Length: 172
Image 1: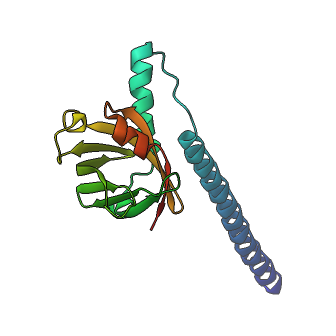
Image 2 (image 1 turned 30 degrees about the horizontal axis):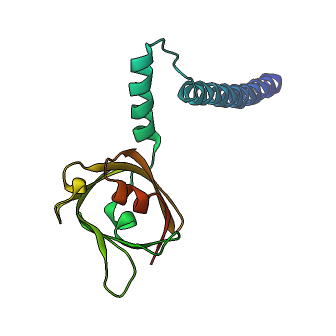
């Protein structure tokens, strides 16, 4: 009888060792599957869709992509007083209002009105005075890099406003 007990004990130990072996193999398989799923999911994010379009559709899509990819500026980033590096003119943006002045004793006002900021575009509409600048708004794109802002004309028939805004400005 002693021999039967010993062989039964050896069988129990083998069963315990087999359990841990199966458990270890299962953990490794699960880890490999998890790695594969993670790899597949991250690769799908990097895929680029190629679409054949007409020239007008490409321009429209390019404009949409520019707005989507550009960092939308908040009013607080643009709001404040900016000084021109060219002639020292002062551009003050406060809420939806702006003033553009030349630095002299008399305080020559070049433009005063409202502005609308959408994405990286700003539209200036003069409301003061009876000149050509009151007839048409001026549309500009802008870029802010550290404490400097630059405006690039999109559409503006007002030459005095364009000549002043086409400069590099720094925040005062």
